[in-house]
Length: 283
Ligand code: NAD
Image (cartoon, rainbow, N blue to C red; front, side, top):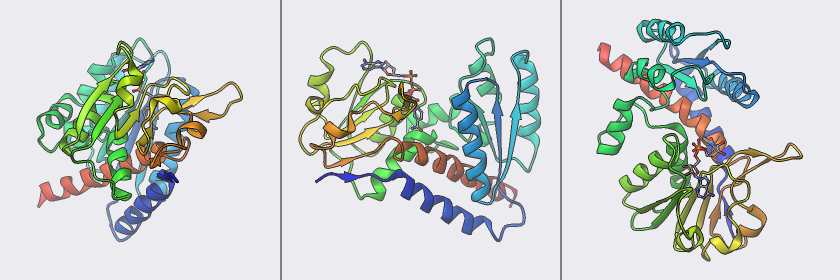
């Protein structure tokens, strides 16, 4: 029988731990979120992040921009937030309005406040194997969830589908750090199924609904579904055909309730770690 990797349960326990840690603090960890797009999903994400930040006892600030905003207006705000001692984490909700320069805006964030771990300094450190100020939330959440279930990664054959900067590449780097043998597949990969069938751990992050069927997975595999897709009936589904695939797996994440809640929990945990680093720097 497969074991469900319950991201909601793990995330709630992480948030509860953070709440206990922040309760006695005079100065609370501060998270700033910048929203510059009119994508309804992004608005929901930002609302959820704000709600969870408050649950953890953090101060949370949301800055919204409309489609007339310039790069410089956002960068000016980031400069102010970089200097503001009450802000410890700055997150730019992606994607941005298409006329904005995503890379330039991310690079304006002080790497010490880059709570998403997207600044090139933090990305570089992750890939070199030096501790970054923060590690991207979704990949970090996946590793944390696997560890919460005492899953050993060392020596395992891990296949990651997707090579984005926010999921595919950083999760591959983290799996390598854990001494897994890592293969990254993507949209130009030939014979995907042959590759995925060799995986002890399969992590799918494509956004292609139900791409992964039963015959893509070997018996006893651990499957992590990162995909979040709204289907025609308005239901949230993932990359993995859960009802079929879960018959073969040893562990599997559900969608929703798997990787999604862990991403938010790691965002808050990163904020708390950046807060602690800023306090230690002043000592
Ligand atoms: P992306 O579009 O940037 O990248 C998708 C990747 O999938 C690409 O690298 C592409 O090469 C690969 N791909 C596309 N079609 C493929 C195919 N047929 N076969 C093999 N590979 C294929 O997306 P992303 O930002 O990495 O996000 C991926 C999915 O994960 C989306 O559904 C997104 O909503 C979701 N997501 C979820 C969370 C979470 O917290 N659960 C966080 C981030 C992203």
